[in-house]
Image (cartoon, rainbow, N blue to C red; front, side, top):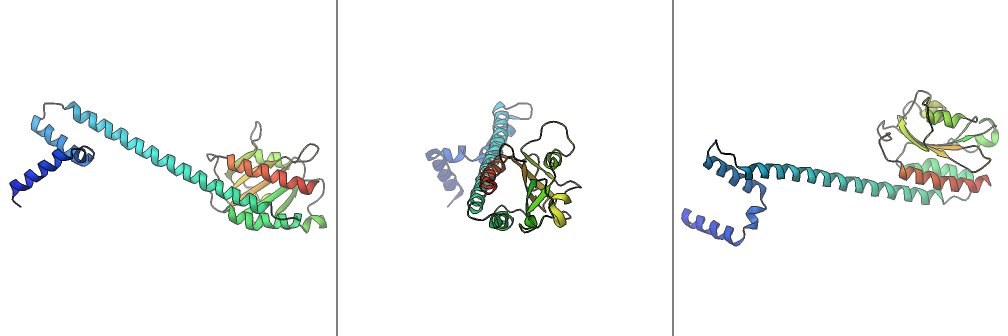
Length: 234
């Protein structure tokens, strides 16, 4: 095909389907640039300026769109994990199995490296009855949970706290404290007349739990956990 025939073919193609040109940003940019060169350096083409601004705005909108989609997907994935963990948590019919499942299957579903249940009590953790309940249970003196969650800060304590572990975290994580780097703390309310509890999830990744993250899903999990625990507390 000769050059003239090719030019005529392209011309007919463009006339029959102009949207193919208008929707191609690279082609439109090349056309605008060629037009600016033809007009000379002393003439400002406002159409080119407008196009640059529109392209910048489109790029920002696309970035926002991708961020929203990614956040929605992450939230959906997190919701699915919480739902699976809740169903697993409700399966055991004995308290010992409930704790064992919490530290094994539930921890695996939630992709955390440690799960600890902290109960405030006047009894010592060395009580033989408590030692039989495994490594998940941690018994503390009254007032410990409030102080641990507050970490020396003033003001009211939030019901869910996400942070990197503190130097005194061995009181919670025991021999795992050397490599647990971030934790999620969920305050538990077992009802009037009962001392509070705390559910602690620990992770080796120091960035798995951060204060900037949302806590709605963990608050829901803690609320279900409270109701499950009330079965054993009577």
